[in-house]
Image (cartoon, rainbow, N blue to C red):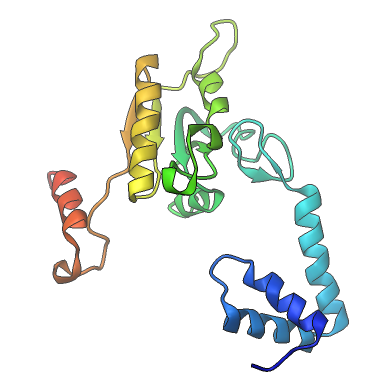
Length: 205
């Protein structure tokens, strides 16, 4: 294997630390950086620095933001009676792309996974419950529904069930996003779990 100079080898190693980046992709990224003009590299470095210096967790929903509370929690146009729980900030973006959901969010930043050592204490869940309590003196719309939109994986299902057990005794409706056949797919290639979910979540037309 070709030995790279120490700075290049270090850059490759740093790229390899990123999720989904192996040796070959790390090499491509490193040499892409080397081919860029110095000002472009400075812009890249500055963008990384700005993210670390300015981005914080929203104190209400845990979204990544440069203002606290975030744009969703502070918006007067959002439906404050509904909170959608997602695992990661990019899941929020996927839901917003539909332009049909107008409620609020709560980001867990993970899912329950005993194998990876992620238990309830590692999820950013504690600040959800103050949002569910109502104070008659405050003119705040009470939360009437929690939508759990965790991923359709073993960890996501375990997380959804755990949250449902905590929230239901509070008298708040808990729903789970529908799962099943993706639009544009072929029945021939759908696995049995997806098909089972599709049959369970069928609706009248």
